[in-house]
Image (cartoon, rainbow, N blue to C red; front, side, top):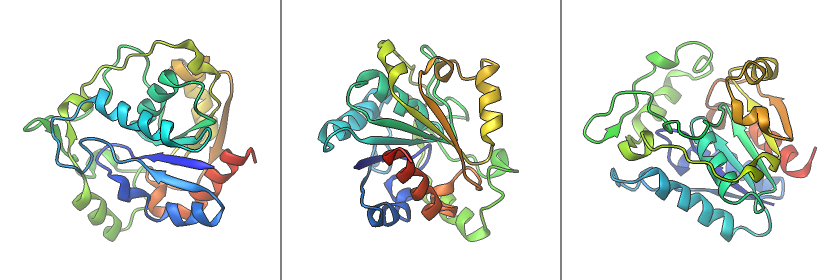
Length: 228
């Protein structure tokens, strides 16, 4: 199966470098998606342009792909499900939940010079980053790509209720499946509360399992792709 991989904020396609060979060994065709403004020097990129890049990757896939989205990009994956609900086999959300219509995409930190730079590790102290050693912290921070302002502050627009029929797998890294279910039940992820098919899987990692548990993550995605 084609497996499309979308990195979260500040990550480019190289974030999946350790996951790709593990997925290939399991018989899949992994395709990290390079987003406009995510490593190509385009600080003027917009959320609509990033969505267009994801939809182009979906259209180019052989058959219906598994779309994998990480962190804030879970909203981008959900936007793709809204735009192409009949083209996805399943949507895997790693460490995040999609925003609802009318919300800013990822307006979380200060904007400087037209972009939202990586804020350092302070906001991610605790379970998010506990499994990152000093070398990985340096590597991620050094490679972090500032998020274009028009992406971070882009407004989420959802129009097709058929998105609720796309099967979803929530991969739970720094939180547990029980916590995720509780947040959804409490109304903190209203889009997933309306989804018709949601499964939860646990992975013993922090917020960035593609760096710290790439093989385990690949096996979880394999199970999602094959119905295991």
